[in-house]
Image (cartoon, rainbow, N blue to C red):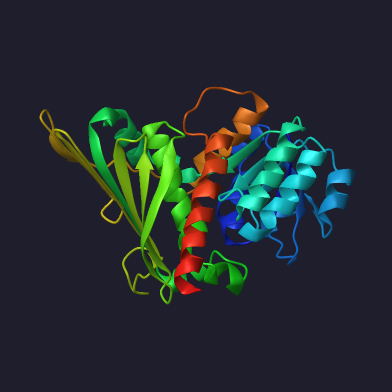
Length: 324
């Protein structure tokens, strides 16, 4: 499989370039052949690939089967559209795009293209999330609370522009939490209800979603952690149901189950000898899926990605009303 890469920033180096320079990528025949970078931040892990400063020229020059897009969120739409025009498959970091208008443009082009788009929502590949999904009796859930916070200083390392950081955590953190609801409840029927609190100075949001007309999700996100917090991210998921209680504690790396049959604490997290985290596993599965499709509920459906953009767009509209 011939692969092109867009972007050579922090996340690209940690996950994509790390993988493509590994022996496992060679075994899987996932061959990185070209890289496009606006900033020309090259890496010693890309010695044997062609570099381009013109994305469209790269697509014309190289016989690429898949393009991996790891660029600022507000650039995704352009790169995806160019790939769809040439029937090239796309793997793009979340979010798909940053506005409903861009999402509709992608929908129109995708309907006329032979391409597939896979959005990298790697938190689905966290084993604690899969454990929750397997143990949960969805019909019995009353409410689910999701909280994820970063420090602003830590988050700066993942952004190539001040504008992207100032746009806030909705696209960066909020889209992850919304996608987990699609995965955990296995539904596209998630609707935005209300934005109950927005603290613009610290970029903190608290909002509510309705799932399948019978349960509510309350989500809190923001750049509010102290710089010396013992982890780069604090993530918690708490589920209340009839005779069931679950809690995922990302800081203490644990998963708590309390119901009529179980009361236990387990640690489902994992590491690999040459990478950390589950973004790596997500990338490999997406590439393998494009090579030979297989059933894997952890791979985000494109309808879920489109719906995610719609929900976040509604939250942004409410925010503008508050501060207009």
